[in-house]
Every structure is written in C-alpha cells, then in structure tokens.
Length: 222
Image (cartoon, rainbow, N blue to C red; front, side, top):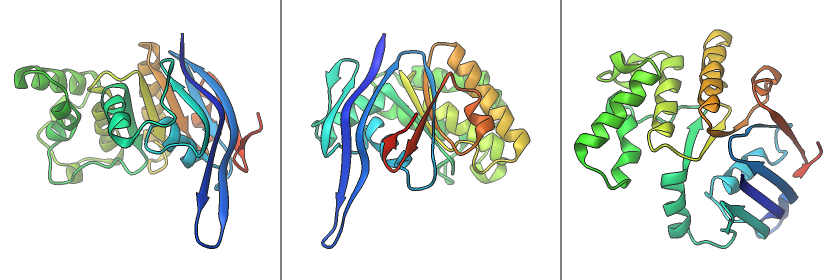
C-alpha cells in the first residue's frame, strides 16, 4: 500500500541576493514496509528532502501525499499532529537530552499521546527491553557509548509505533562495529513491517536497503 507520493516536489530558498533551488521536481512513491536509502554528494538536497518528507518544512511547489492525504500546504500545527503519531526520527548526533535518563529520553514522545502514565511506562520498558538496553534505563547519555546512545535514539523513535522511521546518517558518528550493529537493528525493525528512509554516504549502510534513491543537484538521477 502506498505510504508516500511526491509530485514535482520543489523547494526554493530565497535571500535578498540569491535564489537557490534545493530540490527540483522530485517524483517518488514509497510503499508501506519499504526500506529506502537516499544517497548523493554534499549539497545535493538530501537534508531538504528529509525535511519535506518528515513534515518539518513545506514545498515551494509540487504536492506531497502521506497516507493519501495531500499535506503540501498544511500549516505547522497540522503537520505536528501528523508527525507525533506517524513519524520517528533518528539523527547522527543522537539528540538525547543530557539531563534526562535513558528512560525519560525514550518517554518524551509519549507525553503527547493520550494514555495512562502506567501504559507509558510499560511501553518504554518494553521497547528498551526489545533493543537490549533495559539495563541502562537509569543511566544518563554521557554514561553510554555512542552505539548505546544511538540505540536509545532508535528506541525513542519507535516508542510511539510510527508508520515511518526517518534516519539521517545514523551511523555517521559510530565506528564500523557499532555502525554494523545499528544497521542490523534497523534491518530487524524493517522485518516487523516498518517503513524506513535512511540518508547516508556509506555504500555499506545503503546495502541494507531494498532500494537506493540517488540525488544530485536537487534532482533524482537514479
């Protein structure tokens, strides 16, 4: 079933002196359950693409359908409602809050979901156990290795049971062994039926995906 479809998706950034087309006429369909890698040189439009697909920004032109709804011109409030229950984000720098424990970092997205506090705690404990970091629940981010921090970030992305997981260079700050462990984890998550989009410079990371989308100069070239 189709999850995402873009039609001539275009993003132009304007300043007082220059106009920059970051994305130009992107036409792409992604079905539920697909694992997609997005690759391309620096400045090719990968981050802009993620911002649009992740509903963090709106296109200048074109249309973006998510679950058959055209959200191209949704305002931030409507996009936020969709994001908080349908999307999970994983970043290169983990983006954990250093003053919060592992448990509380993973709990954060559930603060916006209507459920009892007991149910929230149960969900957090379950996801930490699944990702084999339950023993670290009371630790703080600075007490964890890079690989462990990324597992916490993935747990935070998964805890709301999103339809789509978006990962921006998720192994970029990890050594090869921990990077491999994280990608094996993504592979297991994909096998549960999750749709995953990963931006990467690494051919090894991209090899875990079912399909690779190559961007260059703001356009899909392959």
